[in-house]
Image 1: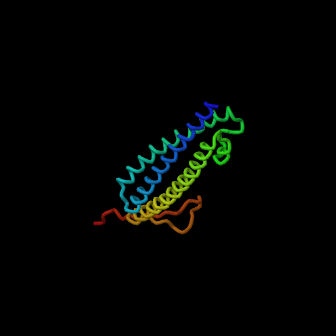
Image 2: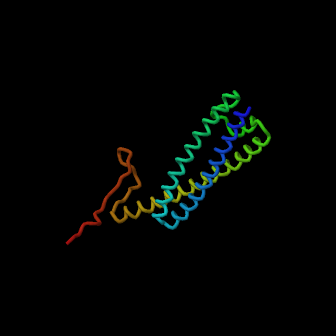
Image 3: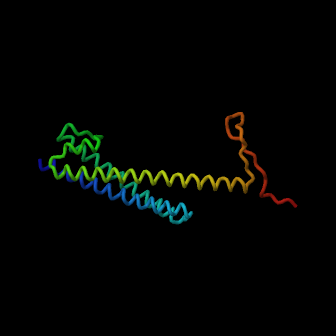
Length: 167
């Protein structure tokens, strides 16, 4: 029973660390959003590096969580490696662990939802910025995409020579 409670406490610690990591990811995503709106490339680069490190931390925590679930599953056959958190709460050995697990599940769900929402919003901004850059580069380069597709199914692109000097 003591080893089982130790496993549950380790799971609580991992979930708490995951929640803190997602909170940090939310803060970074908000910072990235502001940088994308202001087109602050230096900040965007810094945030991307921090996001990559945080993503690695989250992956490691998820691996640890799965290992702990495997150990808990050895002691309780109803628990599987991919058991949903809402189901896992029911198997908590004490009311205190049950309450903490339920609370962590609730806050972690809210954090991951918010992080995904911010990621999607930032993706829209990035795609819009890339479309604007492509449009202006094509306009400068004299490239024009026709309204029809060619015989191979590809877009028909015409090129003007705007950069050549005519004497």
